[in-house]
Length: 124
Image 1 (tube, rainbow, N blue to C red):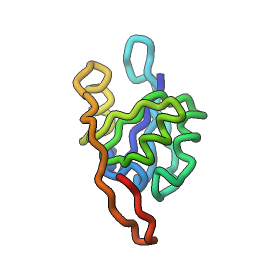
Image 2 (cartoon, rainbow, N blue to C red):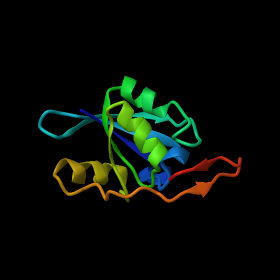
Image 3 (tube, rainbow, N blue to C red):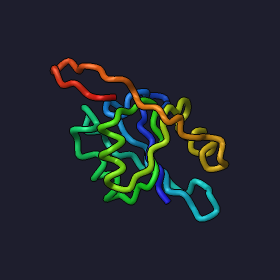
């Protein structure tokens, strides 16, 4: 199994999925232990307009642990069979370990609509 986490400096989860610096991709063993991690550079921009869902799916990612994420990005990830766990916080390594032992649950809520500097309005 592979888990992706939108990441910013100091290995913290980024509060905004589409604007993270990079994605940390964790390879998880059958015994739910972190075996390896890789970095995928972020396309920087609205997650619902980028190809990141396709790129993550191509890498075999099944789950994304997100901070803030909107409807458009959640739908695009779902179309690639990537499950999204929303409103996560903290250090990405600890977050994945907590998820693997069942301590992290999806909040069920997406970000509210807002406008980007380029005038694009996302529903997240």
